[in-house]
Length: 352
Ligand SMILES: Nc1ncnc2c1ncn2[C@@H]1O[C@H](COP(=O)(O)OP(=O)(O)OP(=O)(O)O)[C@@H](O)[C@H]1O
Ligand code: SF4
Ligand SMILES: [Mg+2]
Image (cartoon, rainbow, N blue to C red; front, side, top):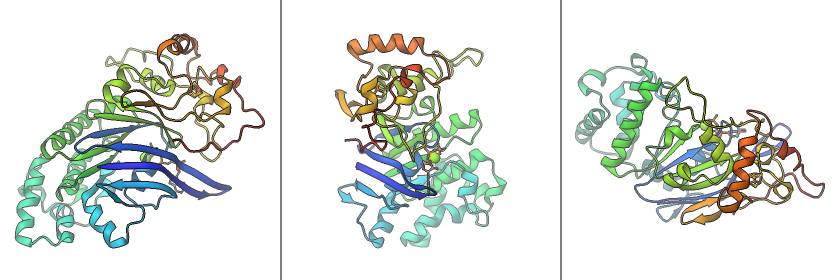
């Protein structure tokens, strides 16, 4: 359904150029959900927008259902955008405050030229599917609803055109925990009901676990690890994935996270570390990590990791000890030992 290859999104910023997405490749199968996870600023939203061609990618390819989107003329993009819909993090600001809910949800159908007599039943059916009573909500405006209800309206607006791909950019991040679960359940139910493929963006690995078939972990504009959900949660092979999982709070709020918290500052994407971008925070970094960029390579069918010393086999034993000894929430000393050699360039070439 979707093949992204060597995608780069470069922005001009004060002081130079910055690769917010620095060479990302992945595939998404029909009817599957990819959880895209990483810390704030790692490029998740930029990647989502580049897939949808809301910003023109600087390099690389986005193929959707066999069609190359990066070179598609405007008319083709308009048609394609009906097939790829997006749900944003802040539902209240994503909905036009002056329009009635019925008109907000109907907009995509109106643009597609569907006859008026077919629009009303379709809008009402989708409102019911997201748990809203069309009689009660159709004539109201967004400010009369809670955040969770607005997110249901945003999901209805996206799903009303029967898209093939739904990109959800942190759709529950701004909601209360109890409401988050309801919206996640709704998206999961929609996915099973319609067979829509989904990219689900989140900060937190815990949020995407139940809804995702596959997970991609992003770090500083690149993919650190990707694989099916069981592989990522049960046998994480990248030290960054491992650190994110260790930082997931236990179900008991009084209990501490199970492992060392991820320490150190996230480097600036304007000036990423040479070699492995994670090396300045990695508890098992070695000199080689500063000199060479790790490419994504397959360590098991469908499970790919960009690390010179993935946490598998013998390397895992060494890594487990180093991670256990790593100081909590501080830059790891091992990383300091791996400062770049003078010949190692600052800007890493993109991943394969
Ligand atoms: N239009 C732009 N011009 C310049 N820099 C940008 C632009 N859009 C994003 N950036 C920068 O690109 C980097 C990635 O931003 P992005 O919003 O994609 O991160 P994110 O992973 O979605 O973060 P968050 O989890 O906080 O939403 C950041 O350093 C951000 O400041
Ligand atoms: S071991 Fe090296 S290559 Fe692997 S994540 Fe750590 S710094 Fe990067
Ligand atoms: Mg974002």
